[in-house]
Length: 588
Image (cartoon, rainbow, N blue to C red; front, side):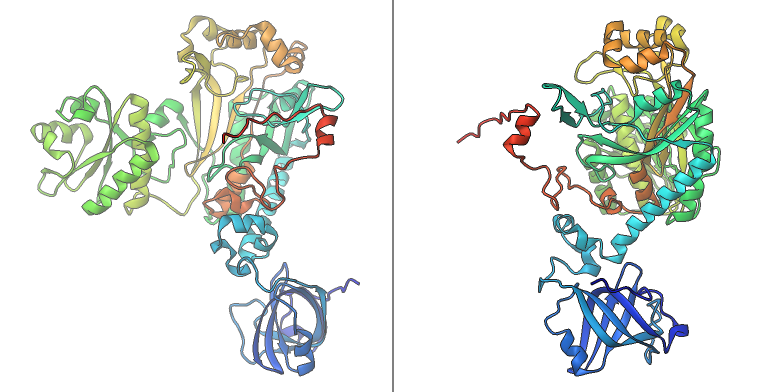
């Protein structure tokens, strides 16, 4: 029998004193003073209430009842003699006249203490996620996620966008990651794929005549986990606009996101429109990253000309990048720790020296620079007391290593990072093509469906590596939230773009038949973006791990240890979909 409640465990106040109430929830703990006196804490979704046991009969009802059992308690509200200002219901307590066990916890010991579950081993938390979620601190992150998603939906609707769901079972498509494949029962030997993103469908909606589309879209990619990426499945605020330019997309995002971040975030200020626009090449050159944290006021400088031939081996024949920091008086131990952290994160060494208060170079590689002191000071604009971090290597290696050094310095040295705000920026003007590290051949740099800047003319006349695309990334506090692009809606330009990566017209028609054919019937120029919901909520909540804001996350190896997935299936199920398992034999 279900016992209804009159109030939640966070609702009772002084105005309820004297009333007869029924509350329900989980038996959190009992502080037993004697055989006829104890203080029980009852917890539900909304909060906690203290229940005072004052009779042996009522105490006996708790005999053999374990913590985390669910209870229904009926009783009278009275004012507490010893109030708890840290508890919302701390002015009152309930004296029970009846107590019913609704759901018995049959375990004397829990895998972890509920209110301290975040301190438990992660595998235990994931295996017993239903217990982990009882912790108010964990539960609140999921509530926050719900609030943010609701706010995103409202904001997009107010901007004139229609929420339209797209298929989950679709065809395999080269989106840059491995697909999750689903075998077909009715079509032997053929497979569906779970969508890595609704990319083609949203473009087809634009071709169908819908002007503004969005959805909170589930996406599936067989990728390894990271702190800011959940393996398997994630969600994004997917949007597309017809007859739109890059600036139209920017205007929508700049209107929608900052108020939500400022309202729900741990920081109460967010960048106002327009966000800074930084070209991809400038981002690498100034910040050493295509997702720079603009809260840090440090920028990279090029020191190649003044240092490459200074006699220090690692600099010879390489690009040298410098990060100059004022007012850093860290010890040698602190500096060595920073350099070790740079090497651990980037795989490359970092170097340093100082200009002391007497105007002399000291520490690190200073002895190699003494003879050119004035030139180095002039080139880097140094003043007494400055610390200089250095990196070297091929251009991209030197830039990215210096970017890691910049971030570590910004987090270490006081006064160089604004920590209480959300700083957004757009990274624009990405190269259309790049040379593949493994293949050594020309490949698409980002999204193959992007419109090249300059259109057909640039595809025909320019060196492919010099062609820029209307592609853009949205970055917040050093975290990439999304990539987006103005789409290539012209079949002739699309074919030419793919020809440069050795795919002909027949390949395009075979790989993207619906989109190619749709574009031949008159497609509007269109553009879109898809900020990651999980990453946005992670930033808003101030969490370091994305798993903290996902209700039922997988572990780092893409396993659901709670449900036991992935799992073996019945042979008949395999036969139904024409699948035979052929695993490699284990070596003895």
